[in-house]
Amino acid sequence: MTADTPMIFAIPSKGRLKEQVEAWLADCGFRVEMTGGARGYSAELSGLPGVSVRLLSAGDIAAGLDSGDLHLGVTGEDLLRERGDDMDSRVMLLRALGFGRADLVVTAPKSWLDVDTMADIDEVGHLHLAKTGRRLRVATKYVTQTRAFFARHGVADYRIVESSGATEGAPAAGAAELVVDITTTGATLAANGLKVLSDGVILKSQAQLTASLVTPWTDSQLDSLSRLLSVVEAKGRARTLATLVWPAEQDVAGQAAVAPFVEAGGSRRANGALLATGDLFAAAAALAQAGVEPVTVSRPDYVFESRSAVLEALAKRLRTDI
Ligand SMILES: Nc1ncnc2c1ncn2[C@@H]1O[C@H](COP(=O)(O)OP(=O)(O)OP(=O)(O)O)[C@@H](O)[C@H]1O
Ligand SMILES: O=P(O)(O)OC[C@H]1O[C@H](OP(=O)(O)OP(=O)(O)O)[C@H](O)[C@@H]1O
Ligand SMILES: [Mg+2]
Image: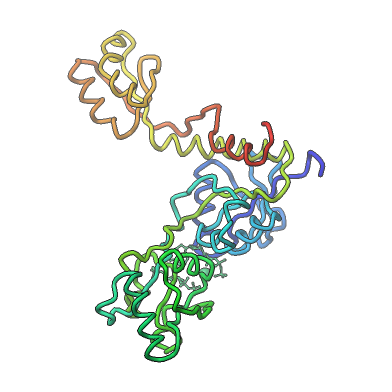
């Protein structure tokens, strides 16, 4: 591989994640520019050379990171974990993106009044087997995570009925007793008369910026990732901070008033400070109390730092110095 081979970065081409990923990239200041025409499936990121963007389905992105066909991708953690119990040895989650949230849950019919926990499922499983000679059926497309979760709860008397869609309808259709699926608003579960077990949350999933550990990374590809990540992290950091500015001639009083907030994780600025947004109103009150005015507050677009703990962790996993 030559130093010029681009880093391959996959983003969803369709579905509910597509627009959210595009909005997130735009918010970070990157424009996705299609290279194969507007209906093509390859693109570049404006302002970030050395990156080749591929548009794929969320499921294919998980598969490509897992197999090493991609360097980087955005997809749901549920789809990544479904690739195998040892997912963490093949991919590294770099950053949770705060959208595409869905919970992977174990559900039972609401009419099963005495069933509320995985322990209850264990009991019902034994009874069902004794009574009918058959094992309890669990409809899901999340086979890997269902098996691991049931094993962790010591539930063995069940079998999986693989489902590829409309999974919540399986009990009503007589195809299964239980359902493991993702839920966001709970509307689909409610419409199908299903309830989530009180200890039945397998995974709280969301979209993750994810790196493949399987694919070879050249120095220039890692460098592209470093630049992308520094912008993404600077944008994320900026959301948590506010800049306060006061008149230069009142700087001694101003710095004294905000000192506790600077110590709590903020930093000093010339005639001002960069503080956590959560401390903003308390700091404004302290400045008013000290007679410092006027105080202007603005929100930074980006807050860059020179080091990225996530990038260092990735480099360590790849045993590469950058
Ligand atoms: N309410 C929801 N329903 C389904 N998926 C959701 C929901 N909220 C977030 N997601 C996430 O979106 C991702 C699935 O997206 P999508 O269905 O577009 O991809 P896909 O499964 O690859 O496509 P397809 O279903 O056509 O094969 C999963 O990671 C899932 O957790
Ligand atoms: O809790 P809710 O907000 O109701 O959302 C959850 C439902 O949405 C998704 O189905 P989708 O309509 O995408 O169909 P598919 O997964 O079968 O493609 C998911 O598979 C659940 O069935
Ligand atoms: Mg889907």
